[in-house]
Image (cartoon, rainbow, N blue to C red; front, top):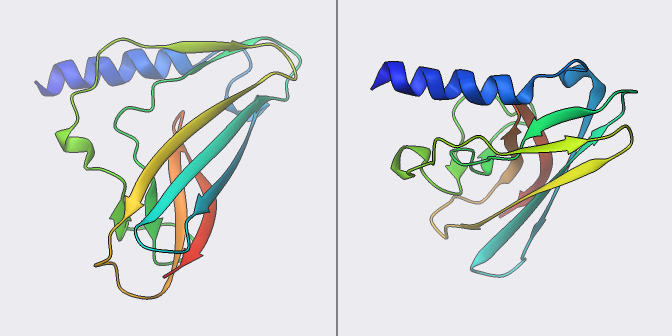
Length: 140
């Protein structure tokens, strides 16, 4: 099982690579959080090709939930995530988008923040194409 997961990861990583690489992509994340309970969150990450060559990105975000962290650095264990990636059956099919120079692709994810989350300020992020992208913050 570990070997097949590793091969899937390798396949997805190869789908993300191109002659321009991640350093020719820009990532911008933002989230909208409803102010009343249930607190629904909608996160959009825009990936733009800022390079001068066409590139491909993986569009499969299966297993990459929206995550909330207790610190602005967004490191360590998240205090909340929109779903448990271990419980999701992701298809082993790599899906890609081809981005010409200047083109972009919007990733959209949603979730509901539980009432049990303690009051505080939380910092949202989502992993897109191997990069943890900051996607705003909210107070509860």
